[in-house]
Length: 350
View 1 (cartoon, helix red, strand yellow):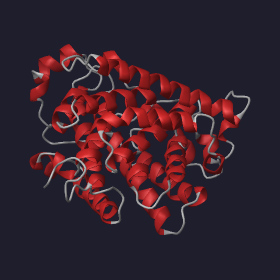
View 2: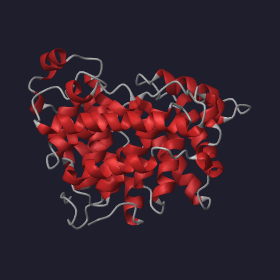
View 3: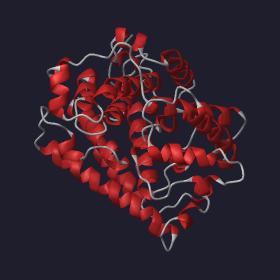
């Protein structure tokens, strides 16, 4: 496979992002809930980490695939609308919740919300956990960035809606939207050095915009006087973590635990920030970026999952060692979905 930044023929960013998120997920799976000292005792120096054998993933990749399947089903049925998306997405999330393969320490918020989504008498807004901004909101958002044919406004709405089915906190919604936007920019060829400035512009442009078309009356289930107040809470927290990334990059310490700079990643905006920081520390070394993300004291599988999505979107499918890519769990389905979206123009080939 050919790896390279924008301009490289056959880059295949959608495939690269989907494989990358799964590889990061699998690399971080055995280090989650561990201190850096514990990881060092088990794996040795961080730059030498190898993909586990077998390369099992967590609920991060499983739910990414659930979102991807639901999104593809909705788009195959006609023009994308909230109702057309919610039906298959709700079905996919509930099927994941019921699956015997859902045995990878899934998050409490996802499990609670999916149990409520399984009750047809409930609206999805009633199932949404509006007090939770856990990283389950955005660990699975990559398909919103990679699916072809969506406008920027639609991508934002889709990213927020898929998050809101489980995590209804405004910061979970904003962080999902921002994560998808970052992946999309990288897939389209944005250089890493330009990324933070564009993300700041996006935060400013969307800070007061509530996606009523996609979210309906979700804001009324939270403790906010207006939809504008609801959405501004989320975007303001995302703006704050962009400050943390920028500060960390002023004098980067590539040997330090990245969670010390941008947060442990258990919550959505910190998972975004720490995953993006690891990519920006090593923008042309995707495997090194994954290792740095996985060798961290926080929610290492989710952090590395997001790092892999960023790196794979930027460098393409060839970013990943063939031996790793060929044995990642769910690899065939990830390549199939990525191949369809790359072929349909879901990401720029350069």
